[in-house]
Length: 171
Image (cartoon, rainbow, N blue to C red; front, side, top):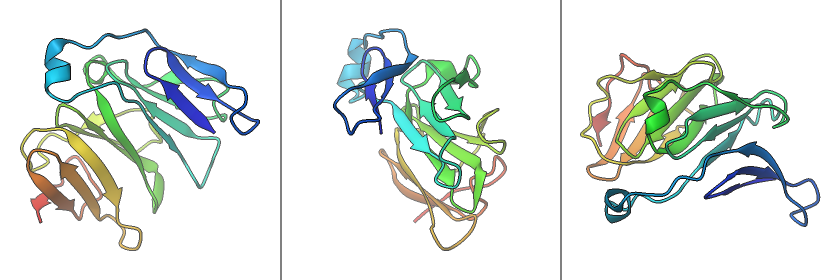
């Protein structure tokens, strides 16, 4: 089991939650008045690849995207300087292709990885207005179908698996 601390990092327990060990340290970030007034708060996102549980992905608030390929023993930061300035709100793994990962931000951006999080590329024209990406859901039975909730404008659907060249349409 894993948990995040809003100020300092990612923790793991192996005894049902009695003891926690820090496995990834982060810098303490304080939020600006603009962040607080817009509803943005401290959040981090943990996603575990169910087909390969030793692969763990961690999206942080303005501190980047990380992955571990060994169950959290070691971590590598794979985001670039642009994504490092974003509030990563949601991380999802494609159930039909676990090397594909979608990341949504507080700034209304989508990022995609086709190589298990080694690199992330921004989806340049997703087809929805900016606003917090509140959730991303891959359809469990229909490959390449993705739903994205934009908190400012509704529910959007893509049938390209969230590809950088794909477009999302309002449902």
